[in-house]
Length: 144
Image 1 (spheres, rainbow, N blue to C red):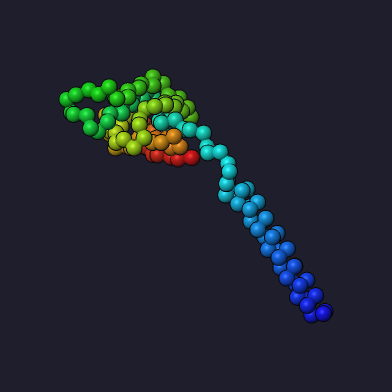
Image 2: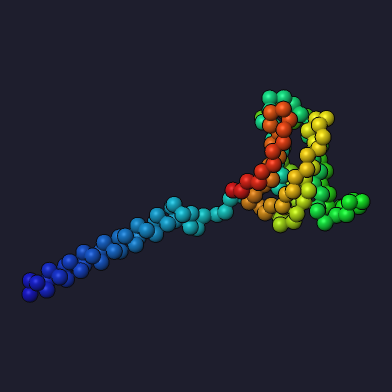
């Protein structure tokens, strides 16, 4: 009888530890993996920031790649920032459509425009135009 009681007790202990591990795993899954959490808020399509220590004028033009060289498109996004101060950033919404291909043209101060190929981002990504030292331009896509 005592052997039977021992094995039943041991089985009960293992079942208790298994239930505790299952509960602990569920808690860790919710806390660390974000199960059940809301998605991050939508991001702006386009953000222009000044990482230089001087003010700059910035002109941005985003043209769909399927537009002919001679034609204007109603989908062309054009924006000018008269004075982008050091450390300042400006955001624009609905500058692009998700998944569409564009040509991004950026002109800083009186320099020749620079052209970049970009893809329209979804709500959780943004295209960043960074004006760096000596008015150099860097374009990156970042996602939440």
